[in-house]
Each structure stands twice: as C-alpha cells, then as structure tokens.
Image (cartoon, rainbow, N blue to C red; front, top):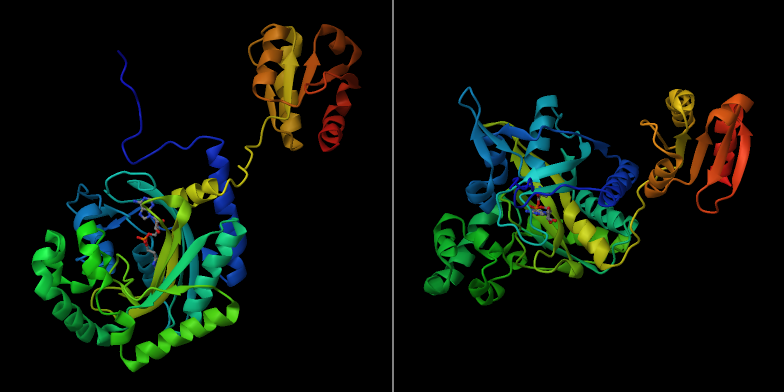
Amino acid sequence: MSEKLEPLPGTADIWEPETSQWIFLEQTARGLFPRYGYSELRTPIFERTDVFVRGIGTETDVVQKEMYTFEDRGGRSLTLRPEGTAGVMRAIANQGVAEGDEKRVFYMGPMFRGERPAAGRRRQFHQIGAEAVGRAAPAMDAECIAMLVHFLEELGIRDSRLLLNSRGTAADRPAVAEALKAYFAPHKEALCPDCQRRLDANVWRLLDCKVEGCQPLINGAPKITELLGDESKTFFAEVCRNLDAMGVAYQVEPRLVRGLDYYVHTVFEIQHSGLGAQNALAGGGRYAIALASGDRTVEGVGFALGMERLLMARQSLNLAAAEAPGCQAYVVALGPQALALALPLAQELRRCGVRTLCETAGRSMKAQLRTANKVHAKFALIRGDSELEKGTIVCKNLDTSVQEEWPVAETAARLRAALAG
Ligand code: HAM
C-alpha cells in the first residue's frame, strides 16, 4: 500500500479557495499599515538561537519548551523563528537606529513553535505583525493599538475584546515580584509543578499559567497596576487617555502579563469569541530589547496577529469567502493546424490580461468542452479547419450557450469587451 503523504501534525497545505482568504488578509495589511507610516520588512525564517533566547527570555514557555533548534554543519545553534519581534530587532540593530530616531515596520509569514496541535494551535502558524522601534511615548502605544483595531475593522471582524494592562518598568519589577511571592508562597502546594518552580525563578510568569487548578489563586492575586511606581502609572494613564480620545474601546485586565519576557509598560491582547479555547487573536505590547549583548536596550511597541485565527474568526462571523480568480477563456482546438495555433492565441490573450487555459493534447471537441466547464471558464474559443479557412473563431458563452463568430484578429478586443459586459 502506498504511504499517505500528509503534512506533519500541526502543519497544513493551504489550497484554494482558502489561499484567496490568506491573500485577502495580506493585501488588507499591505493596504492599511503604510497609512500609519509602516513599511514591510522580511527577516530570515531562521536565526542564531541567541537572538530569540535573549529577546524572548529564558523563563518563557516559548524558549524552554517550544523552539525548533538545530545545529548547522559548523556547530552553530540555529532556531526556526517562533515569533517576529526578536528578528525584527536584530535586523534594525544591524542597520542601526540613532537615539531618538524611530523605525516602523510590518511583517508577515510563518512562525514555528513545538506546541501540542489543537484547533487554532499549530506548529507552523502564520503571523501578521508590526513594530514601531526607537522611541518611548505612551501615544505610540495607543496609536499602535488603534492601528490593530482598525485592521480588524477592515477585515470585518466584530465581537472582539481588547484587554489592556501595564507591566511597568524594570524599576517596578522587584516590588511587584515581592508582592506576588508574598501572595503565592503560602499556597505553593496548590500550584502546578511549573508554577512551583516559577515562584522562585520568575514569579511574573505564574500569572500567565493556563492550568485550570491555578486559576482561582491567579484570579485573587494582587493587581499589577496598583503595585507600580508613579512613572509607570502615569505612562499607563496616558495610553488609556489617548485610546479614549480615539474612541478605542478596551478593558483593563490587571493580571495580564503575556507569555514573553521582553515587555515593559503596556501589554495587550485581543480575544475573540469565535475561536474556542485558543481565544487570543492578537497580542502585543511595549518592549525593551538589548540590540546586541551588552548593548543599550532599545524600546519598541508592536503586535502580532495569528493568521489562522483571523480566518477562524472571519468564518465564525460568516464573512463572505473571497473568490479565487477563475478561468475566463478556454481555447478549444480541433485538428493539428488549429492545435498548433492554440498556444500562441492563449499567450496573446494572457498578455491582454485574460485568465486563459488552452488545449494541449488535441482531444475531441466534447472532451475539451468538458474541461472548459470543469475549470468554470466563462467562454470557449473554438477553432477548427473551417474557421481557419475563413480566418475566424467561434466564441461560445458557456453560461448561456450563445455563440458568435469573430474575425480571429479581433479575438482579444472582443473577448475583453464580452468579459467587461
Ligand atoms: P504571541 O502572543 O506569542 O505574541 O503571538 C501572537 C499571536 O500569534 C497570538 O495571539 C495567536 O493569534 C498567534 N499564535 C501564537 N502561537 C500560535 C500557534 N501555535 N498556533 C496558531 N497561532 C498562534 C508574539 O508573537 C509577539 N511577537 C507579539 C508582539 C509583537 N509583541 C510585540 N510586538
């Protein structure tokens, strides 16, 4: 028995008509983000492992459990990118960004995480993301969030919730960590084994635990926003004020920390009711990353949306599927002479913008028309010996079966008129 060549678990082949949906997402991003001053950046799919470990943080699930890491022939440790931000920061560091300068980029493409596959959770998934790097201002955070919300509007995605919180700055960390430890330590036995370890290693991560048994304790934990210093509180209040001024609706979620360790100040997540258990449609925040080891840290703000989840959300809202562009004309050729002229005619039509398929095998009229119907061609252009003699071609509308005979030299012009009409 032949082996089934299915894609690996957590990966997928993407066929039409779904491909058209992906293109729609990509085109909408490419249409919208430049209006906010962002340009497209394409970074490599694999990087030195260090780029991600330093950027994302050693105590995160992504770095500890999910990265696809391998050695190249030179013994260097490389990793398939699990997210876009760390690579974008590496690329910007490579170009250099002057102090006080700002770079705005967006990106899209595959990311890789060795997670347990489930609905909306893949090992190869795709993100559309954006980063504004170089300056620290609360208005930038609000503008970035507004662009994300605008993008969802352009995609027709309603019924989403924007959750917002602040993690403060490095200066706030010890006080918050101390308060969290003091709260969780007496309940250590009730926590999952990972959280018991997090209690000492990185107590912030505990708030991001998804294990059911840990939730009641997490829900009663001190609110981060109340533990922050004045500078961080003012920054967060300014983000909120700017969002209010733009009419962007949000909900403050005082225990939202997000799964990556590079965040400072603002963090946010968009959840959607149509996604089921994996309900995060997008996530992001402000971050500080050292561009090179020992280098100064540079701040940025950004987000990433999961493309598979965007499509699931659109589907849950019954949004009309984008149509794959179908065939417009099928060149039917009867006899060897007509067959020899079929390809040149098809080429001419394609150059005039018509999506054309063409007989290449010299089959019977019936077989050729069957193929034309199968590919949903709008018109069949039929030529045999008698048309060749007259210098004409028969154009058959495959929806109405109405036929016209045209001078062959006028085929492209007449066909374009017929398609437009
Ligand atoms: P993240 O929350 O890890 O953030 O991922 C962002 C989005 O990617 C999620 O909300 C989800 O829609 C999608 N996603 C993540 N993992 C999977 C998966 N295994 N399968 C399907 N979809 C998934 C980041 O990646 C940050 N880099 C976002 C960011 C940009 N923060 C600042 N700038």
